[in-house]
Amino acid sequence: MATKATPDPADIADRLHSTAIHLLRQVRREDPATGLSAARLSALSVVVYGNYPTVTEIAAAEQITAASASRLVSALMAEGLVERVPYSDDARSYRIRATRAGERVLREGRKRRVAHLTALLAELPTRDLESLDVAAVILGHVLERGRS
Image (cartoon, rainbow, N blue to C red; front, side, top):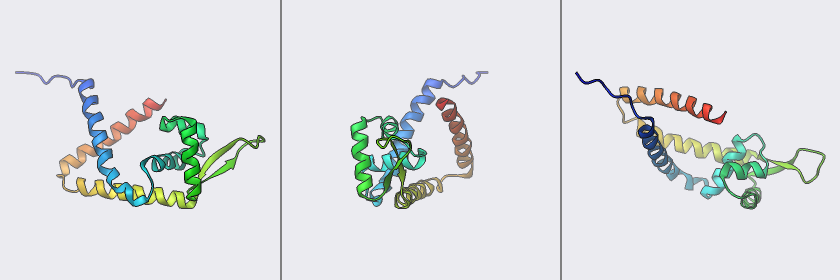
């Protein structure tokens, strides 16, 4: 009787990587409804979920230069989606905060993405949904460990 081989983490990582990219591409189809470019929407997400990041922190999160992040922030400010907030005695030091309008744009965009994915998942049998639920929890734990 053949025993089942232990799954290869590298094979799983390769499939997860590919699937994650395709999943993101699928749900990003909803993003044009926000009226923002992909870069601006991504930067806005960093601001909303980043606890008042600096431009340097936005650049690091987006893996872009500080100059590019500064241009994104300026564009988002011009659209009324973010604002600068001083955070020290140095007048040159500031953090970026989303306005209510910025939070709304991101919240509504996320809602559309989730609705799109929900429609895809709704077609699956219960057993597959249960498996995905467990996998989502496991991936959450893996990603949390990766941040530390």
